[in-house]
Image (cartoon, rainbow, N blue to C red; front, side):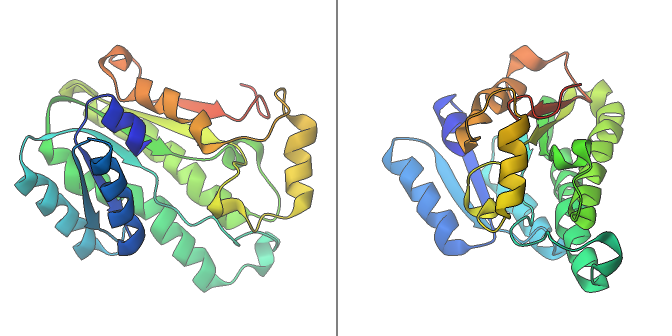
Length: 228
Protein backbone atom coordinates (compact mmCIF):
# COMPACT_ATOMS: atom_id res chain seq x y z
CA UNK A 1 0.00 0.00 0.00
CA UNK A 2 2.84 2.41 0.81
CA UNK A 3 4.52 1.66 -2.52
CA UNK A 4 1.26 2.22 -4.41
CA UNK A 5 0.58 5.48 -2.56
CA UNK A 6 4.10 6.66 -3.38
CA UNK A 7 3.60 5.70 -7.03
CA UNK A 8 0.37 7.73 -6.97
CA UNK A 9 2.44 10.79 -6.07
CA UNK A 10 2.08 10.90 -2.30
CA UNK A 11 4.87 11.65 0.11
CA UNK A 12 4.72 8.62 2.39
CA UNK A 13 5.36 8.36 6.12
CA UNK A 14 5.74 4.79 7.35
CA UNK A 15 4.81 4.45 11.02
CA UNK A 16 6.12 1.07 12.15
CA UNK A 17 6.86 -0.54 15.51
CA UNK A 18 9.96 -2.40 14.29
CA UNK A 19 12.59 0.25 13.42
CA UNK A 20 14.69 -2.09 11.28
CA UNK A 21 11.72 -3.12 9.16
CA UNK A 22 10.36 0.41 8.90
CA UNK A 23 13.62 2.04 7.87
CA UNK A 24 14.32 -0.74 5.38
CA UNK A 25 10.94 -0.22 3.73
CA UNK A 26 11.40 3.56 3.58
CA UNK A 27 14.90 3.12 2.15
CA UNK A 28 13.56 0.80 -0.54
CA UNK A 29 10.98 3.39 -1.56
CA UNK A 30 13.58 6.16 -1.64
CA UNK A 31 15.82 3.97 -3.80
CA UNK A 32 12.90 3.70 -6.21
CA UNK A 33 12.74 7.48 -6.41
CA UNK A 34 9.88 8.11 -3.98
CA UNK A 35 9.60 10.63 -1.15
CA UNK A 36 9.40 8.30 1.86
CA UNK A 37 10.06 8.69 5.58
CA UNK A 38 10.04 6.38 8.58
CA UNK A 39 9.05 7.10 12.17
CA UNK A 40 8.88 4.48 14.90
CA UNK A 41 5.41 4.27 16.37
CA UNK A 42 3.67 2.00 18.85
CA UNK A 43 -0.08 2.54 18.45
CA UNK A 44 -0.61 1.07 21.93
CA UNK A 45 1.36 3.96 23.45
CA UNK A 46 -0.36 7.39 23.38
CA UNK A 47 2.97 9.19 23.78
CA UNK A 48 4.39 7.35 20.78
CA UNK A 49 1.32 8.28 18.71
CA UNK A 50 1.74 11.92 19.74
CA UNK A 51 5.36 11.75 18.55
CA UNK A 52 4.08 10.50 15.19
CA UNK A 53 1.80 13.53 14.93
CA UNK A 54 4.71 15.86 15.76
CA UNK A 55 6.85 14.18 13.10
CA UNK A 56 4.16 14.61 10.43
CA UNK A 57 3.49 18.22 11.42
CA UNK A 58 7.18 19.15 11.37
CA UNK A 59 7.60 17.45 8.02
CA UNK A 60 5.32 20.15 6.64
CA UNK A 61 2.80 20.14 3.85
CA UNK A 62 -0.17 19.00 5.90
CA UNK A 63 -1.84 15.62 5.73
CA UNK A 64 -4.13 14.21 3.08
CA UNK A 65 -4.41 10.45 3.67
CA UNK A 66 -4.16 8.03 6.59
CA UNK A 67 -4.19 4.23 6.47
CA UNK A 68 -4.76 2.62 9.88
CA UNK A 69 -3.41 -0.89 9.39
CA UNK A 70 -1.44 -1.64 12.57
CA UNK A 71 -2.87 -4.71 14.29
CA UNK A 72 -2.12 -7.96 16.09
CA UNK A 73 -3.22 -11.02 14.15
CA UNK A 74 -0.56 -13.72 14.25
CA UNK A 75 -1.12 -16.55 16.72
CA UNK A 76 -4.25 -15.07 18.30
CA UNK A 77 -6.76 -17.78 17.41
CA UNK A 78 -7.62 -21.22 18.71
CA UNK A 79 -9.38 -20.58 22.03
CA UNK A 80 -13.11 -20.36 22.53
CA UNK A 81 -14.36 -17.06 23.93
CA UNK A 82 -14.60 -18.26 27.54
CA UNK A 83 -10.98 -19.48 27.53
CA UNK A 84 -9.29 -16.29 26.32
CA UNK A 85 -7.02 -14.73 28.93
CA UNK A 86 -8.04 -11.25 30.05
CA UNK A 87 -4.53 -9.93 29.39
CA UNK A 88 -4.61 -11.23 25.80
CA UNK A 89 -8.09 -9.78 25.25
CA UNK A 90 -7.02 -6.37 26.54
CA UNK A 91 -3.83 -6.38 24.44
CA UNK A 92 -5.78 -6.98 21.23
CA UNK A 93 -8.31 -4.29 22.09
CA UNK A 94 -5.53 -1.83 22.89
CA UNK A 95 -3.71 -2.34 19.59
CA UNK A 96 -6.47 -3.27 17.14
CA UNK A 97 -9.35 -1.09 18.34
CA UNK A 98 -7.88 1.72 20.41
CA UNK A 99 -4.87 2.12 18.11
CA UNK A 100 -6.77 3.42 15.05
CA UNK A 101 -8.74 5.77 17.28
CA UNK A 102 -5.60 7.14 18.92
CA UNK A 103 -3.83 7.67 15.59
CA UNK A 104 -6.87 9.31 14.00
CA UNK A 105 -7.35 11.47 17.09
CA UNK A 106 -3.75 12.68 16.95
CA UNK A 107 -3.54 13.23 13.20
CA UNK A 108 -6.95 14.57 12.18
CA UNK A 109 -6.07 18.19 13.09
CA UNK A 110 -3.37 18.05 10.38
CA UNK A 111 -5.84 17.41 7.57
CA UNK A 112 -6.52 20.28 5.20
CA UNK A 113 -9.85 21.08 3.51
CA UNK A 114 -10.25 17.46 2.45
CA UNK A 115 -8.76 14.10 3.30
CA UNK A 116 -9.05 10.35 3.31
CA UNK A 117 -8.90 7.82 6.15
CA UNK A 118 -8.80 4.11 5.37
CA UNK A 119 -9.16 1.69 8.28
CA UNK A 120 -8.19 -1.95 7.87
CA UNK A 121 -10.84 -4.18 9.43
CA UNK A 122 -11.31 -7.89 8.70
CA UNK A 123 -13.94 -10.08 7.10
CA UNK A 124 -13.63 -12.27 10.21
CA UNK A 125 -15.81 -9.69 11.95
CA UNK A 126 -18.40 -10.02 9.17
CA UNK A 127 -18.34 -13.81 9.09
CA UNK A 128 -18.21 -14.34 12.86
CA UNK A 129 -15.22 -16.65 12.82
CA UNK A 130 -15.13 -19.11 15.75
CA UNK A 131 -12.26 -19.25 18.24
CA UNK A 132 -11.32 -15.66 17.41
CA UNK A 133 -13.71 -13.75 19.66
CA UNK A 134 -11.21 -11.15 20.82
CA UNK A 135 -9.85 -10.54 17.31
CA UNK A 136 -13.22 -10.23 15.59
CA UNK A 137 -14.51 -8.03 18.41
CA UNK A 138 -11.55 -5.68 17.90
CA UNK A 139 -12.12 -5.59 14.14
CA UNK A 140 -15.85 -5.10 14.65
CA UNK A 141 -14.90 -2.08 16.74
CA UNK A 142 -12.87 -0.76 13.79
CA UNK A 143 -15.98 -1.04 11.60
CA UNK A 144 -18.07 0.86 14.15
CA UNK A 145 -15.34 3.48 14.56
CA UNK A 146 -15.26 3.93 10.79
CA UNK A 147 -18.95 4.79 10.71
CA UNK A 148 -18.76 7.12 13.70
CA UNK A 149 -15.78 9.01 12.29
CA UNK A 150 -17.41 9.25 8.87
CA UNK A 151 -20.41 11.02 10.45
CA UNK A 152 -18.24 13.41 12.42
CA UNK A 153 -15.66 14.27 9.75
CA UNK A 154 -17.91 14.46 6.70
CA UNK A 155 -18.52 18.20 6.92
CA UNK A 156 -14.76 18.75 6.84
CA UNK A 157 -14.53 16.90 3.54
CA UNK A 158 -12.76 13.95 5.16
CA UNK A 159 -14.00 10.52 4.11
CA UNK A 160 -13.57 7.47 6.33
CA UNK A 161 -13.94 3.96 4.93
CA UNK A 162 -12.81 0.48 5.90
CA UNK A 163 -11.39 -2.43 3.96
CA UNK A 164 -12.18 -5.89 5.33
CA UNK A 165 -9.67 -8.34 3.84
CA UNK A 166 -10.03 -12.06 4.01
CA UNK A 167 -7.38 -14.58 5.01
CA UNK A 168 -4.34 -13.13 3.26
CA UNK A 169 -1.07 -14.94 2.65
CA UNK A 170 1.40 -12.86 4.64
CA UNK A 171 3.59 -12.97 7.73
CA UNK A 172 0.67 -12.14 10.03
CA UNK A 173 -1.27 -15.26 9.02
CA UNK A 174 1.55 -17.79 9.06
CA UNK A 175 0.22 -19.28 12.30
CA UNK A 176 -3.39 -19.66 11.10
CA UNK A 177 -4.47 -23.33 11.29
CA UNK A 178 -4.85 -25.26 8.04
CA UNK A 179 -8.51 -25.83 8.93
CA UNK A 180 -9.20 -22.12 8.49
CA UNK A 181 -7.22 -21.92 5.26
CA UNK A 182 -9.36 -24.79 4.02
CA UNK A 183 -12.56 -23.00 5.03
CA UNK A 184 -11.62 -20.00 2.87
CA UNK A 185 -10.43 -22.16 -0.02
CA UNK A 186 -13.73 -24.07 -0.07
CA UNK A 187 -16.00 -21.03 0.18
CA UNK A 188 -14.38 -18.26 -1.86
CA UNK A 189 -15.98 -17.43 -5.18
CA UNK A 190 -12.44 -16.80 -6.43
CA UNK A 191 -10.61 -19.88 -5.27
CA UNK A 192 -6.98 -18.73 -5.38
CA UNK A 193 -5.31 -17.61 -2.14
CA UNK A 194 -5.55 -13.91 -1.31
CA UNK A 195 -2.38 -11.83 -1.66
CA UNK A 196 -1.53 -8.50 0.02
CA UNK A 197 -1.54 -6.74 -3.35
CA UNK A 198 -5.22 -7.61 -3.78
CA UNK A 199 -5.94 -4.65 -1.48
CA UNK A 200 -3.70 -2.00 -2.99
CA UNK A 201 -5.87 -0.95 -5.92
CA UNK A 202 -8.91 -0.36 -3.75
CA UNK A 203 -6.83 1.41 -1.10
CA UNK A 204 -5.48 3.66 -3.86
CA UNK A 205 -9.04 4.47 -4.94
CA UNK A 206 -10.17 5.23 -1.39
CA UNK A 207 -7.22 7.61 -0.98
CA UNK A 208 -7.97 9.38 -4.24
CA UNK A 209 -10.16 12.34 -5.14
CA UNK A 210 -12.41 9.94 -7.06
CA UNK A 211 -13.75 8.54 -3.78
CA UNK A 212 -14.79 11.97 -2.48
CA UNK A 213 -18.47 11.02 -2.11
CA UNK A 214 -17.92 7.57 -0.60
CA UNK A 215 -17.74 7.42 3.18
CA UNK A 216 -18.72 5.24 6.12
CA UNK A 217 -18.49 2.09 3.99
CA UNK A 218 -16.99 -1.31 4.76
CA UNK A 219 -15.75 -3.11 1.67
CA UNK A 220 -14.99 -6.82 1.97
CA UNK A 221 -12.04 -7.82 -0.19
CA UNK A 222 -11.95 -11.59 0.14
CA UNK A 223 -12.69 -13.19 -3.23
CA UNK A 224 -16.36 -13.52 -2.39
CA UNK A 225 -15.92 -15.45 0.86
CA UNK A 226 -18.55 -13.13 2.32
CA UNK A 227 -21.07 -11.26 0.20
CA UNK A 228 -23.25 -8.37 1.31
